[in-house]
Image (cartoon, rainbow, N blue to C red):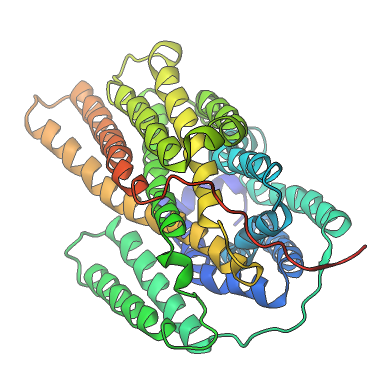
Length: 449
């Protein structure tokens, strides 16, 4: 690797895909374990450890002088992100238990979580265009440093009286099952749904998951207590989060393709185009919990918000080669932002509602797992949809450059139509949730400063 530009050109798309997949496999397969580690050893300790490890892996990736080192760094990022992500949400859950403060705290968290993808697109575009791809890795260190200082100064140390045993057989089964499922769906993107490796991975994942559930029902200290998902409020909320993961990927991934490959936006302009969606998410996340949720209940908020998001996605299916940002793209992004901001904040609260402090880590990990698996399924499924739509258009129109360009647009808008369908269908999922006030999690005993 003699230079950044030659390196990027030499690696090519299939190699960069391995960089992405390496992180997804490590992160997705170890999330439940990461969440339970926070419950066992303290969320503060787990959060700080995850931050330091993630920052170190980012430094390694930014300084990588070979492709193998970069992949290793991305896998290490996934390893440390697996306990870090659920620890952050579980800390929020056990810290803000007051009914007046909790909705506001989850609203801010939902705003940050929802806006992160779009802001990341803009920041990534700025760094790669004005600096180097290496700064996409290095910038994580700055964020981690700020979070680390805040964690050390503001988070109280937990008063852990006893630590139950780790469910080792359950951990192995869950990690293997999630690895197989995430790998199987990732493999679809470069092969097909009938590929033997794809089918074998997905079937193995389903079987291992079934064995895991059977095991958890009979052990004294399960990795995943089934009471977390059998409760209607929490179970329905986990399903809602799963659907959010599916729909969000259709927006960020394929709309990005449309903006850059379809109508020629630069990475920076693409990031700026997503800002209306960020504004919608922030506005909805920070207002809905205190204004809408207490008056109409979670079932109504989630159902109506999914329909609002679906309407925005439907508008985006009308995009063409001559579409403009203000007239065509912006309206279609504001509505999903408003809808998903409401849904995420409500679902995050519902998924941790009434959870004992000893289980908040694994409950938070289930939220991340739902998003990760939902995104993996969505990416694999919608890649097939996009390919089929482009092939159908090319086969029925006269060959030419304009036909090829329009085929690309047809493929992207087809995936957005499916995303709208995900959101409409998810209204049925929301009906599972009782329309009752969401109970807070149990606060964690802490040592006074």
